[in-house]
Image (cartoon, rainbow, N blue to C red; front, side, top):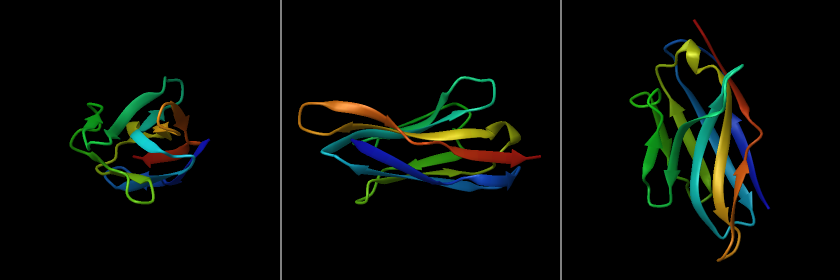
Length: 120
């Protein structure tokens, strides 16, 4: 099993910045990819940004130019820097990871979710 523990988030004014972090621990043989998704009230969960083991990133259109995801470090922690925040960025942000627990099998894991609220 793999656990994802998120930190950061909270309340920020429009135009401000927040950083989210996600630490993966447990039975980790190799991390394939880590990323962030978000879910606003009444809406489906959507990709914010992801990064794979090779460092290739994928950003949602709304995140391009404002958000930046960093590859996981030696402590298997990935960060999402969010700048120029807008009220529509409000939602619950979830860390996601695809991890090999052994050389043959991988699985997908989710964090518990972290509330981000941006006031106008």
